[in-house]
Amino acid sequence: MIPASSRTLYDEDHVLFRDQVRRFFDRALIPNLDRWEAQGIVDRTFWRAAGEAGLLCPTVSPDYGGLGLDFRFNAIVGEELAYAGSSAGLTLQSDIVVSYIEHLGSEAQKQRWLPRMISGETIVAIAMSEPGAGSDLQGVRTTARREGDSYVLNGAKTYITNGQLADLVIVVAKTDPAAGAKGMSLILVEADREGFARGRNLDKIGQHSADTSELFFNDVRVPHSNLLGDEGRGFAALMSELPQERLSIAIQAQAGAQRAFDEALAFTKDRKAFGQTIFAFQNTRFTLADAATKLQVGWAHLDWAIARHVAGALTTAEASAAKLHHTELQNEICDEALQLHGGAGYMNESMIARLWRDARVTRIYGGASEIMKEIVARSL
Image (cartoon, rainbow, N blue to C red):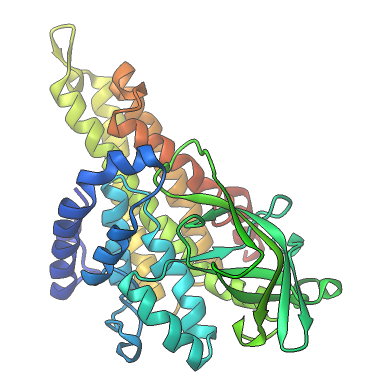
C-alpha cells in the first residue's frame, strides 16, 4: 500500500479524502479495469461519476464550482489512480489542462468550461506533440491564421491523451510562424467544429485504456475569443505550467513503483520453488530490500517536492529532476518485480505485466529523461 499514514505532508482532511478516493475506485474503477484495457478507452460515465465524487479539478475556485483545495488533493488522486493500475486520463484534466484555463482564460472561458470540467461533462485534451515535434515544442508546424475576427487552424497532432473522448482541445499553434517561440499561441477548439477530425485510437505498448489519438485540423475556423491567453505567449505559458505536469508524472510513477513492489512481495512470499518460498532465497530478499529502500527515499523526496509546489517554490529544474528520478525508479522497480514473477510476469493478464508496460512511456512523455537531464544541467 501507499505509505500514507507515516507521511507528514498530509493532514486529517487529506486522510479522509484519500479514503473517499479509494472507496470510489474500489466501486467504479477497479471492476472495470480489464474491460477498459480491452476496449482501449474509459467509459464517459466514469468521468461523470468521478466528477460527482469530487475527484476532478479539486483546486478550482468555488466561484466556478470547484472545491478550492490545494494540490495535495490532486496528488492523492494521482497516487491512488496509479496504484490501482489505471491509466485513465483524470490527472491530465485535473493537473494539467485545467491550469491553463484557470490561469490564462478570460472570465467567459472560465465560466463556460471550468464547471463542465469539474463535473466530468466536458473532457479536455491539450494538443502539443506533432509527427515532427515532440519534446522540442518550438518545432510545432500547426498554424492558426488570423482572418478578421476568427482564427483558421491547419495541421496535425499526434500522441494526444484523451483525444478520442475530448470535447475541447487546447491546441498549440503558430500564429506567427516567422517569430519562432514568440509566434506560438494557445487556441481552444471545440470538437464539433467543422474541419476537426480524430484519427485512430493509437495502438500503444501500454496504457491501453488511455485513449491516445491523432487529431487533424483542416481549415478549422474558431472565433478570436477562443484564444487562450495572449497571442504569441503560448510558449511562455507552456513553460510556466510544465513543472506541475512533471510533478504529476513523478507522483504517478512513484505510486506505480510501489504497486509493482507490493505485487512482487506478495508473489514471492506465496510461490514456492525447490521446497521453499521464492522470498526465502537471499537474492530475492536482497532485491526487494534494495527496492524498499529506494521507495522509502522516493516517498520522502516526493513529499518534499509536493510541499515545495504547494508553497509556490518548486522550480522548473526541481520538477524536472523529480520526473527524471521517479520515472527511472518506476521502470527499474517494475522490471525487477516482473523478473521475480518469472514466467507468470510475462503473461498479459497479470497485474505486474500491465504495470511494466504502462511504466515505459513515463520516461518519454512530459519531456523525455534526456531532456530532463538537460534542464537540470542548465540550472547547475
